[in-house]
Image (cartoon, rainbow, N blue to C red; front, top):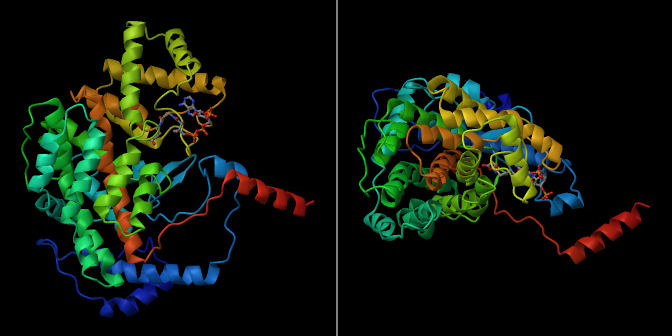
Length: 470
Ligand code: CMX
């Protein structure tokens, strides 16, 4: 077992507790004697739960921050109040998954070709360990075995109007899968708290397994002939997602693996992660919790920015008619800002430099299609926009985020329907938020309930605090 998420004390405790861990069924058979994901997690979690309990008991009253009034009115930016094990976002360095940067996970996670397999990232986020290729292959097979959609979900998707946004369709389909929730059924039968995580784990894997079919069904229904491409129970997740949507180009499959890996997790405070975690804290099933998160991801300031970027780029292209000079692009940026809109794909609530997810996608483009016209345009904007945004003086971060680049890669391979892009983001986000939901249930995380006040009450509070400090 990796020592990455456990202190020495916790590891000692774990070795004492190992014998008392109840036995779990194997979820899939593999020739390898290695542990399954569920067995690995079950082995880690008692010590982790004990470590948290002890940490809370010994340091629970330590002050870890202060809250300014402007933060209460400013979207709670920077307030520490969520526990999120999978990743931490550093303003300068960007996202780290269990302490590893994007280049590190690209290097360390198991691969079939050059790009990491998102199944491996799921394993890492849940356990803190890098799995072997055998373990990842077995997990891919397990997810594939859970992929079938119940008839009522297929019918629901087939009956939705094409003009309903793909993200609304996505969230509805995930909500409708509640009928399959093993957690909800077990809870209704009065299962013990200590077993919540096991049912949450099963629901999470069932849900992840079904997402490629849901996403592809939406894509094929809304934009194509409604018929899904090939599904191969022996193939990995990224390949099946690409194939089901009707894309078999091997570089596109590589792109899907990279895309699903890097869009997965971005610590716990972003809207989709926080919403999933919050709704899950009420013991809503993974289906209802993820659907809530997807509804947040669908917002233009969050995941839908990838669609907005493409629309904005196309308008720019139409307006400048092939003139990609600095002056023309500068003018277009100022026109956007002066009309009271944001420049989509730029800025971030936490990051203060170019998003490493942007860089990973840029490197993919440089490797596979350095001369693609839209990539050239995006690169030109990358040269110009930070200066314009800095001069504009509002945003705290004039650098591009993940959404600034993703659509252009999809365009290159012919996936040109921008309103579908956030669905792909959503499939990936499930890889990041479901591990935390399982951990939350395993360590007995409480229902979330922060304090709110009216403006009148804040005024009273501020008056009291300010007069007592005079
Ligand atoms: N263009 C123009 N103005 C921007 C801007 C941008 N790209 N980014 C921020 N600003 C403005 C804000 O609207 C805000 O203006 P007001 O004071 O008038 O309200 C001001 O700059 C300060 O904002 P900030 O503290 O820098 O940024 P926030 O934490 O409030 O918001 C974000 C972060 C991402 C919502 C914002 O940068 C934005 O709207 N960017 C464009 C949309 C986008 O790309 N979203 C995707 C983010 C990644 C993701 O979640 O997928």
